Length: 373
Length: 265
Ligand SMILES: Nc1ncnc2c1ncn2[C@@H]1O[C@H](COP(=O)(O)OP(=O)(O)OP(=O)(O)O)[C@@H](O)[C@H]1O
Ligand SMILES: [Mg+2]
Picture 1 (cartoon, rainbow over the protein chains, first blue to last red):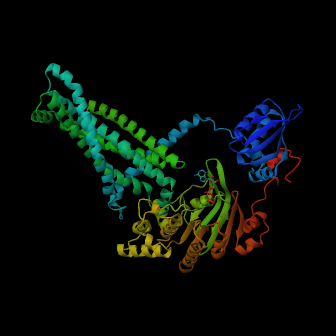
Picture 2: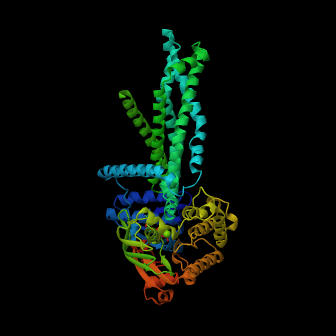
Picture 3: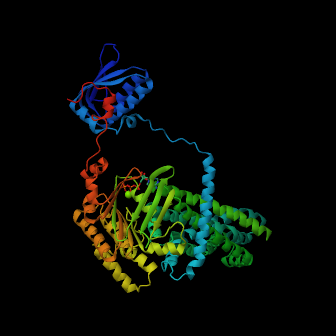
């Protein structure tokens, strides 16, 4: 005798005949199935053949039927028998309504997909790299030729994108750069003060910000903000067949969607970088005033002396390249989406991670180049 | 005069999964062909091959006489501007209003003045009964309205060949009949060729000159509706009679396997 909640009881008939007989009473549904399933499965796994009486069952639902499919599968594997001796009317109906198309569908075990293909990873990687290069080629070719073709795609799109990619990011770029400048100045203040070299805080910040930190900070923020947005936009459009629709309308998706963003980011990225540098230096100036007895005039004067045109230009050049990397990586991931909404989330994440990675690698390469030049 | 659509020996697959095998299809100018077949049998896949969105695993597809996968950009664009496609999900651009969606192909591919374009747009929207929805964005429309807006976009350029993936699915019978009428009228006035996927027999009755029925990757039947009714293929007759395929094993195969001696009383 066993209980599976108040609604189902099961009773093993006493005689030890084979198969063991079992009478179920009550409701066999998704609530009561777990307990019965466990009890029956234990028997079957021990190789006991079972005969089950469903005559007194009031109601069987699809979970109850599915349980039999699974038990039957286990019974077959164990080589024992599983029978249903008697049926209530409702149970008979349930077996007919909740049915598999064939017995083999009922008892096939769905194997979890296994990770068999390590060798394929490399092939996939190479294919992806090729796609990325093709996308780059496409984007830049269209970017260069588009203005000269008779009919420009979507007037004002580049401007609209500049607002989205640039001006809406300026606040956060300014704020974060200010905090970073402040922190940097604070860190070096202690050291510089011991040498009485307070005023060199300005030099240090001017150099670090223009050459390195402003482009990098801006790129990381834009990657998180706009790289992800580009990937999500393209991926969503792909999933909803909008990309296909563009193609059948005779519009090249790269030209239609990506090129206006490329124009926009080529202007906004250096602009944001300038904002970042200015606010970083302002952050340092605040520390200079509060902790290092530097008047704003001295600080600004010292900064102006420390700024080198070459540093500024190389910072701006870097920022443009970073912007391109972010955009192309975002677009690439967007076009690569597979699956539905979940796929969109996946490519959005990888767009950000890959873009930041790409930016940092590019930054290292730039550092090497500038070192030698 | 080339066939508007000429498909020979088409094999379609996703990865390793073959969807269509050795499919031949010739569509005549001015003909309305309806494609029938069970859900998931590859009708949308066939359309995607027809308009060059997918590359055949084998065989060739020529749209308005041109193999889109071999053609250069200019030729391809020229053929695509003479082609209209209504996607199963509508595929309107969500960042543009309904009117802008319909105007897009006109702006990109014609030299019409802006005022004329906007009149064409309003006319096409009016033809599908969406005159008042012009300023809305696609997510603000109901499913059936989106379908109709997408049809308006597909016919914006008065294409020579129109592909429709379930134009009347999800529409009430009256609106559906209106869409069917519209498709017929377009064919009659412009000698437009139409390839329409549909599940609605009512719609087939109204518009089809010829029916293509797919099943498990093959052509199950091809011919007129009258011939279809005469067909002695069981699957075709079941489809017409809307009869569910017989449940295998009668009383439920699982139960049979459980060796129930005493069946349902
Ligand atoms: N992107 C895809 N990747 C893999 N398989 C796909 C993809 N798209 C469709 N399929 C498969 O191809 C088969 C045919 O799909 P298709 O969309 O052509 O069916 P359909 O005939 O249009 O069905 P419905 O009437 O339901 O729209 C299905 O089995 C489906 O699983
Ligand atoms: Mg379909």
